[in-house]
Length: 302
Image (cartoon, rainbow, N blue to C red; front, side, top):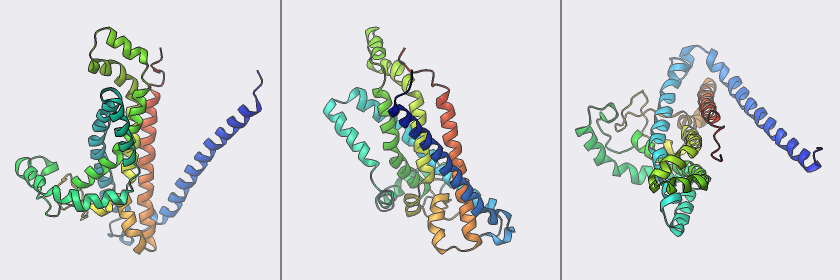
């Protein structure tokens, strides 16, 4: 059967858009690699810190990963719980209002979150941090000594968790809404409670969407700049301690803070750190796509 002109135009436009995305992505990768190359081949003593690119980037990479991963561990279960409540438990009017409210959180600029974390959340965490250090100090995450200002990695993690919460919630909520009504009614007809229906029908159907949404939130957390730059009191180094004043910075925040005053090989070094962040983000997306593709044959419609 011959295709209609509209179908051919749409197919061509879709193919062109896909190719354009790949070209832009390759262009960004090439630009980062070319600009970072001078720092990768320069002597170690010419790099800021005097110990080479790897030593310069490693604490930043560690700070980026620890802040993003802990933020994801906080936000993902909370987002799934909120999505379940809005979809299955809340009355319709309350669910609509909560949905709009959660979506509006995604529109708040990151600098506002940073100011909120710096002025409100940081002082509120001082006393809890002291308690954690006194009672749970044997855990490396709370080893202390606690910061007197509250500008710690813990606050940065909480701020990032709040920032990625609406993204994950919105995607997961839509996935739960797409759960086949037939599956839900069959579970209830067999005597399942509402929670058993959710556990046997909604959660299995939305599992790939939960993973995809979590990876989307992780990508946002990995690249967040201003909120982390405002909140953290950076001292460098690599530590799992979340409540002390010895905090590693993140790659994005370090670039934002250092780039205006950098020149020469220092700029190339910052771009090299950006190349590392680009590679990490690309790897996260590839892993998420691989996990989702393993479950693409399960549509829930059968």
